[in-house]
Image (cartoon, rainbow, N blue to C red; front, side, top):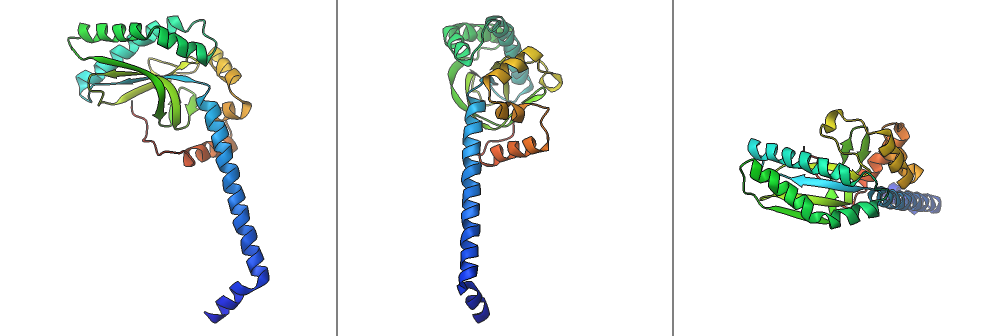
Length: 221
């Protein structure tokens, strides 16, 4: 023990330990600042759609998808000429009542009487993949559609740029949507979310998840 204490008291050892600690602190600060900048850029570039089912029963889950399909059909018409996230959010506010009425119409047609709650705001999302584009966990602006008790599994997509698909698992993001997404993001951010990323980019993606402010659960369909 005495040898260890003497070793620790050595001035060169102390200097070395201080340098190591400073290097670790510097690395952490750089990583944290990188995550904050890239996460903000990614989340600030998209506007998402979030549909929550009444429950996890088969009937309520099927109803969720039917409501989703009707909303996507209407949404795709509205978003044809939208070129910015700000326009998409403005459109969502302007047609908020229409989204609610469309959802209610489908619900009633299917024989249910659930209420619908529409919210536009900043919400927490898990890591999610849309076709060949992925987004890290974090806070994103979104149009949230809550059906009934809203205690069932969720469904997500991106309203702007339009990355929504009826079948997410087999979807491929259209080139014009990718171009619009690339135009709204920095090159670094786009490389992280795009499927063409190499190992170094994937590593950065993991850093984004590791340094997320909050732990978010795995996405559910």
